[in-house]
Length: 160
Image (cartoon, rainbow, N blue to C red; front, side, top):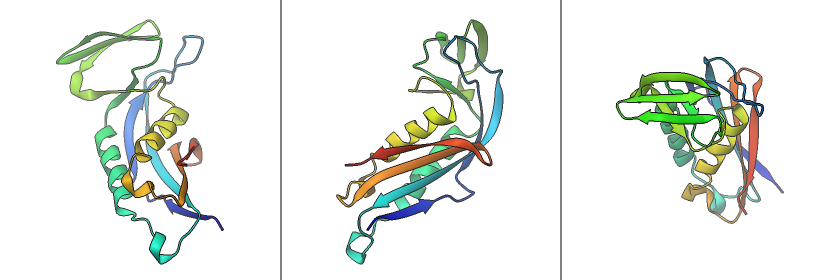
């Protein structure tokens, strides 16, 4: 038997700005989305002895949403991103265009793009570190990030 536990509540959302970069060095204009996050955990067993607690997953999702809310997300590992200055202001060049903003308005994430695909993979990697998912009967974690209802991406991460 396989079981699937889903956490997809409306409260796991954040509004932020981004610019998706393309492989040819072009990018979207700066814009924002109201992102939502859903998580599914796949298990071999769902009996009383093998119950996993929802609370750590829900807390991690709530914390992430609060941290990312109302920020500009930037991809630290993007080859078209140059950090010119990072002190009380953040000055960057992205795809040849210059941006300057208060440092507190931007978050640099250790990924190569701010796309729903990259965000789903990054969030999955973060959640996979939770001790609640370390049980041997937990075999996969799927994270879905939507930038608008019905438009998003999922990443499934094997935990075995």
